[in-house]
Amino acid sequence: MNENLKPLMPNFGIRAKLSFFTTSFVLLILGIVSALYLQQQYKTLSESLDREIQPLRKYTEKIVLDLENVSFSFLLLEDFRYRLKTKQTELAKYKYKVVKVVEEKSWFTKNILGKLNYIQKGLIDTEDKKISYNIDTFFSEYITEQKLKEIEENIYSRMRDENGKLISKEKFSNIQKIAYTAEETKRKLETLQREIDNLTLQKETLSQENTNKNKTQKEELEKKISSTQMQIYSTQQKLENTLDELNSEILKFYYQSQKNNIQELSLNLDLIRIQTFNLNSLKPGFDTKIFANVNFLNSNHFSNHPNIVENFQESIQSLDSKKLISLDFKPNSIKIEGREYEVFLNLIFKKPAVVYRA
Image (cartoon, rainbow, N blue to C red; front, top):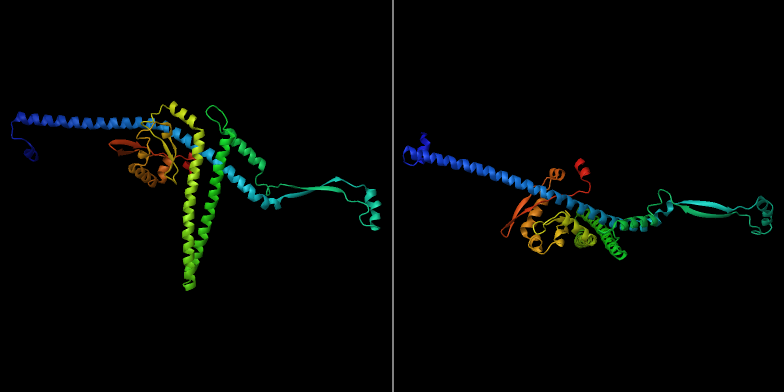
């Protein structure tokens, strides 16, 4: 017998030792088999969960893209309105002027009777009657009111509920007002950002010279920069809140159809919750809790739990190019108040094929 095993063996006879070895071997085999079985079971459950998650991912992707398209259409329409208003005067100089003769005087009037005008100017009207008007060219026509109206009607015609009924004029007008506020806030934000870039450039120029006058001007610039930064922050918050309101109003209109989709998928919203986020904000856009009864999973306490927030932030920070392309995100297990939850993260792109090629 191996000398190294002697200290481990009890001081018994050969039968006892044989029984000890047999028992140990059987336990070892059982342990290995159990581990393999559990591993197989875990793999099977994971694959089963993945199969259940796939329809949810496709469903969520459709919701996000539909919502994004409708929201973008409203914002684009308001952006066109603003550009049309500001560009009309500027582009008028590119219009082509046309002069057209509508009544031509006869040769007799022009050449014979016209001689009388030497005696008294303007006695005989020898001028042809003309009209002049402007025609838009490729450079003068940015977009027309008629085209804007066509775009608006197209958006309106696509806003139908699950029964195919068009959205009310009042509701449509309300969504337009929110989109107008969002575009107006966006332009203000862009102006503030240009302003702070200009102030920063002035500060850098003054920093090159070290005089008392420049020092005073630099302090004044720093105050302006600080004030502008505060305005930028508040404007960004307003823009995010307005966009959230816009998406919320659009979602409210499509509420019933999404609820029907939830029922068709037979999702148990007591066990599953779907949220969508913009990468620039942790505020949820679409959230299936609006369709579910109040329980812990669908409560604000759950979604605002430190473990959930921390996990989400870590997932965002850990994004890399490979994951962006492959869209392969492994679920994270999180324990909250004695229960374990699986958190799946899935990125949604407007044009996945283009992203993959890029």
